[in-house]
Structure formats: C-alpha cells, structure tokens
Length: 130
Image 1 (cartoon, helix red, strand yellow):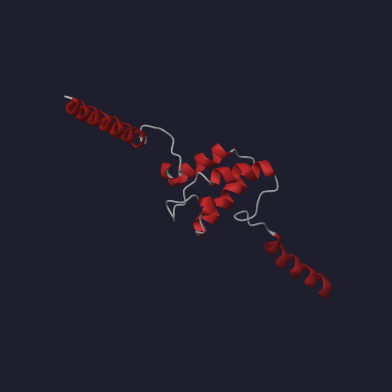
Image 2 (tube, rainbow, N blue to C red):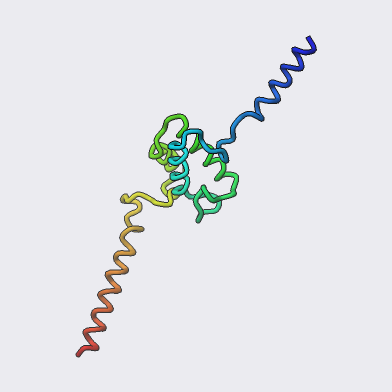
C-alpha cells in the first residue's frame, strides 16, 4: 500500500514537470514552428506596444506565444490564429494591419502628404525658373 501511495504521489508531481510550456519550447513539427514564429513576428506586444511578441520579455507576450503555438499545433492556420487575436485585441495588435475602411487614413495620409510635398516643390521650382 505504501509503494502504491508513493507511486501515485510521484506521478502527480511529475505531471506538471513533464508538461511543455509552449511559450518558450518549439513545436516538434518544423513546418508548424516556422508558421508560429512567422506569425509571432507580425503580432504586436500589447504591453511593449512597439515590439513584436517574438522579441518581448513581457508575461503577456509569453502567453500570446504559447497560445499561438497551441492553436497551430491543434491544426489552425496562421490566418485563423491572427483572426482570433485581432478579434480579441483589435486591429491594433497586428504590426501589419490590413487595409480596410477603418485603417484607410493610415494608408492614404502618407500618400497625400507625399503628393502635396511634390506639388509644393514643383510650384517653387517653376517660380525660380522664371
């Protein structure tokens, strides 16, 4: 009876130690790991804000890395995982936001500023040429 109890205690203690922490441990399938890392490079750390979760030491970034690996290991595509993260954290979580009516000003303002600067420069050059 004592041996059985000791074996049970050893089994219960060994289970958490044997569990993989997918925040820091690579997936066994190299293709899935490459997909996970590529996705992590494009997701913004919500704590650090200017850094992808792949390079952040924040605890929340580690949780996000773990979730990405778990979902990809479960068979989800990187786009499905991205959609889930965007749904949960908003478009802002993506370092490469998709063009939409909401993000249109972010894409159009630099182009308008460039066109305006070119127009001003051309007018000044014309005046100097006269």
